[in-house]
Image (cartoon, rainbow, N blue to C red):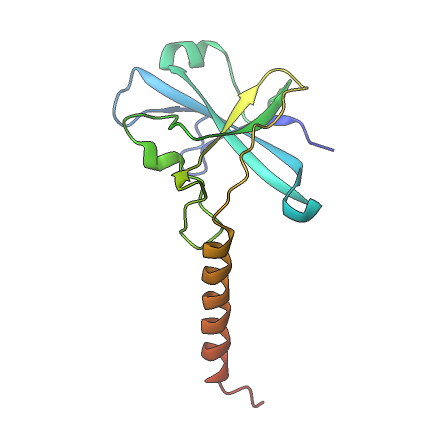
Length: 157
């Protein structure tokens, strides 16, 4: 069961409408939701997801958003083989955990973003990656390095 979508204030400034550093005519409002997500191997886990509502600063301020405000709808995950942002495609790359490895299909990178939808029945659009062996190798190396690092520590009390 998913929680409601809530408006979140900026942790640093406390502002709900965050004005763009590059152009004061544009701003964003951050929304969050806790969702139950079914991952690989049908493993269910609770995840916090967030999205940005973007628009002109004036329009977002006129909407009267406030911290803690509940919005109807849901936050959905969209994945694509086409970049969402043509100018900075690397910002939406789907990265596997902490590996830094980009998830791919037939060598093509997968792009991922979270968006708010006012429709409560909106569904995620997911693409399954196929570079499984590359990821297994990276996780195996990370685990091996962690074990070697721990072996050099003194655990005497």
